[in-house]
Length: 152
Image 1 (cartoon, rainbow, N blue to C red):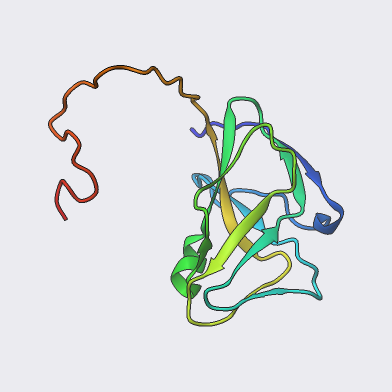
Image 2 (cartoon, rainbow, N blue to C red):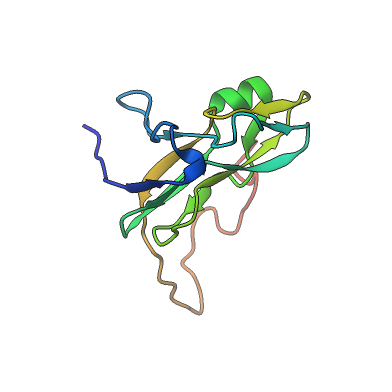
């Protein structure tokens, strides 16, 4: 069984008429986000270009939660379009419009039209860290080995 959390959502004028973010299947983790661009003003992303795509709503996440904005695998695989700061984090105290930074890493122009699903949003609980300064850390088998240190 999947857990759920209630999130207050308020439409902005340019988002009215779009669908509420939702998961597409019973076991999906991410709710699709769609573009709230004007129907007569699509956004063309040329190869290498990026754009901030409005989603047309604000929301109030409950305390103790965050929303992560992630790429849609189909856009990435078929068109080379992805979320630039992936995953982008939306904090529980943010009340501005939800937007997605898309980048076109493909070879062709990509046109973002009104209502197009451009990203997915995963809501997750947050654990806030409290850092404690120490003189030394405990030893591990890996030690300070970093990128690629455990093999290819």
